[in-house]
Amino acid sequence: MVFPSSSPLVWILAGEASGDVLGARLMHALRARVPNMRFAGVGGVRMQEEGLVSLFPMRDLAVMGLVEVLPRVRQLSARLEEAAQDIAAQKPDLVITIDSPGFALRLLKKISGLGIARVHYVAPQVWAWRQKRVKEFPGLWEELLCLLPFEEKFFGKHGLKTRFVGHPVLQSGAKDGDAARFRDRHGLPESAKILVLMPGSRRSEAPRLLPVFGQMLRLLKKNMPDVVPVVPVSPVVASVVERATQDWPVKPVIVTDIHDKHDAFAAAGAALTKSGTSTLELALAGVPMAVTYRVNPITAFFARRLIKVPFVAMVNLLAGRAIVPELLQEQCRADVLAREVQILFEDKEVAQTQKQAFATVLHGLEGPQGQLPADAAAEAVLEVLNRKNTAKTLG
Image 1 (spheres, rainbow, N blue to C red):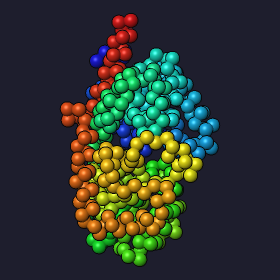
Image 2: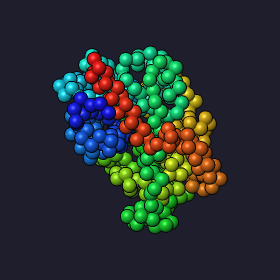
Image 3: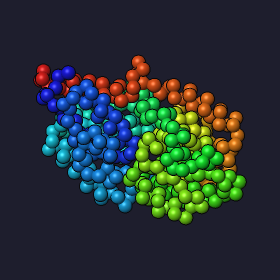
Image 4: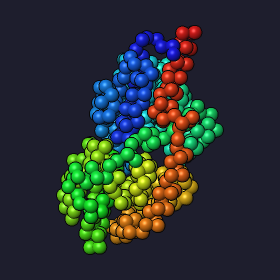
């Protein structure tokens, strides 16, 4: 590798919990190849454990939805300016933005005149909705690292340099949990039916699902009195969950540690989750699930007219068919969810059919040449850095 110094500086940004995990793995893989690499930028607990001193709290960026973002516009604009100024001042060798396209792509555009190499990790899901936005992307990055195999072709046909690096869920450890350890740690008997509830990693989304989950538990208690809800959330959202679940008929086990979360997966008989990567984590752990989600009605109104794919659950999208139920918006009701949970626990054929489909989906997410996704991403990043620095040297 041709670097301008013995310790290249990479400015890296993640805007939410899943991106924080990706960023931490990528930082670790990069340092394994370039031990003196330095990092600056914005990240959460996991990236800070890898040595990042975050420019500002990552939670300031963790917001989604057309309506939900409006009250935060001024703060987000200020954070955007702060990040751009920091990049200009530090003059890193490379900038990496991870997911969070609403913020990350604006940042990449804002720094486009600085002559710094840029990589965006996790493709914007414009293939799902607002496909015309792809015309805005040329010039934003030197390379786009994508997680889903079909994305390479989609963005490639629009002339964007894209590389499929495999899906990081395969490195998550979600399948390595210990059910007995989870029950022992939380004092749960073998008779307890563990129900995983995943309301989302953002402060703005979790409160939309938690009330309906509480109502569902009241209905379930009549037929399944031994159900114990487990809510894995990021530390950022834990206090929100604690307040919102105080009146639940069954006290939930709130899990913030990633290993405890995986142990919960191993102990679980069923799960209700928001759409997104959480469906792949549960699939890897072999947990039968249903997907549910509720957003502001105005957000839902516009989203339904813009979405171009037949499914919102990632496992369904990758399978090309409905292997798990999608109970969205009007179907996100206590009675509907309670009925579905009971089926997942009691109908062994339904659970087994889901698990068989999960295996096929996950096989398609493996990285090139069997590499771990973080390793494939690190090598792609270093190639971009090397090309940029070679060009500078020759220039």
